[in-house]
Image (cartoon, rainbow, N blue to C red; front, top):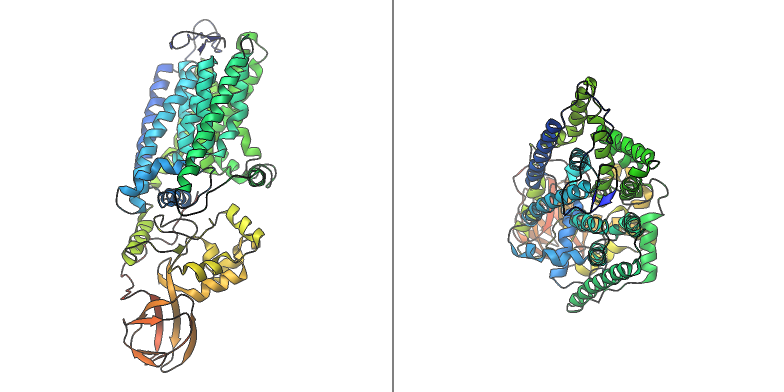
Length: 592
């Protein structure tokens, strides 16, 4: 099914809709100095190809976000047979192969990102097919380009998150419901069940897809059969995926995950209501400021579509364009409308921008030729900025940390961090996101103190300010609602000492100890420790040389150096040595 230049749906065996210059807003007669659509189309295709090249560069050079590490951590949890949530974890089975390709977490995420670039290219093709059902060739190409050049798309299109994976599924549903035969609606329902099993975020498309389906069935007599077919296939696919996921978890050693109405209600409240109207207004404002050309065109397209509702020949197309743009309205209430979410929320809104762009290009005056060039240049700015930033490897410090950890521990050990940087190791039970910290504070339970006592994790990575309990000035900057409980802060301070950069190991550190000065200390995690000092030291009455391995039980001990010690440490492990490499950066994560 296609839409002709007057906005009427028609069947044409996949051919592009005819284009009528007069309908598109071009005045009849000769044009004063029109911007050449063919040249503009060539420029748009060129920008799309360059944007794809930058996505490929980002696979290797873009800073790995904590969500990407968490995503991989979920894959390892499923591979180990550990219990994970039923919702938003089905994806993990699709990426089990990552745990078998060798290399460390950075290598595995890089491989996954390469696959995501291919998925992104497929999404762009699907979006273009959707746009061609509604717009002329120039408008369709412009809408796709505006999405590909959008700053958050440039940054996150190939991120190893659920968004890039669920996007082509949702676009496939939109394409199918544009021509709602029983078979196509059944297929759309199956894809909808898949999308919802992958991410609850897919539900944000429900009003748009339901609206488009309603428009398609409006004049059809046989409405019940396709609706039943779509609903049944959606329920069956969703249930099959969740049941298969649950069954795979029941084969492991952990408890079988479950769903509860209370849990679902809590998720819904946190996602949609808790933070009020425009919960991520700063993210939205930044999107507008970073993408002025796209923002203006989308707004112009919105106005144009509303105006065209008055014209019978254009009404149906305008209704569909407006309905498809509904996902972006979610930024008004969706708590997780962070930059990466725009990959799912933004694409169909850009079709409005493509519609306005096409009308503008074909307007027919000399000034517009310059204006079109300016618009394209502005739209390409985020891509240019990203290319400049990616000239340096943003993963360098992350690679250092991951490599050093794997040299320290040739087998997985329990550890503490924000939420999964060493994805192949078992981590603490909570993810220190904004949401995770809210749940943690609401529960009021000393999770980390208990985890240290039970799991005895020898490794701590300070990849979030919340864990830096040694830096009082940093703690003061954290909102009290998201700080660690005092018991947990004390447990971390008592259990760990700095090793290298943001890597901490179980142990203790003393600075500026005088000769023979006796200090009493406690060890929280029993095990072998290495004495790192400039000379011998007495530990529990026994003299040990620097570099010696000392077995320490949990509990009180004494230490006395044989000479002044500016920096004396007891660090977990046998023969532990501090690397000579200098950390390459001050921070691990550079943002969302």
